[in-house]
Amino acid sequence: MKKFRNIVKAFMILPLVVACSSEQVIKISGTVEFVGEEKNKVTVSQSSGFDQIILAETTINPDNTYSLEVTPSAAGVVTVSCCGAQRVRVWLEDEDMVINFR
Image (cartoon, rainbow, N blue to C red):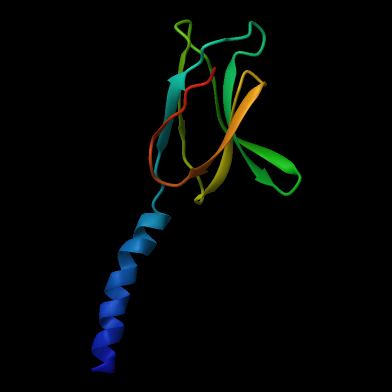
């Protein structure tokens, strides 16, 4: 009976391991109300000690929309910054996001 429980537990954990190990592309999109002329980018970065690792970056479109794709190495907190002036910290794991900036 104990062996059967261990097998059942293994099959319950297996999908979690597979889901976490597969590389998933996450789409982040949205609009920007006020776009600066010089700083017109949206950047996704992650902290690593004192360093910021840029995971993705895109230029804001002429219609004030943006869209970028991120392939995180692991789930965690990232910073999405816009035009160098606004930023939001979000949990990046497995869901697409819509983030609108002012």
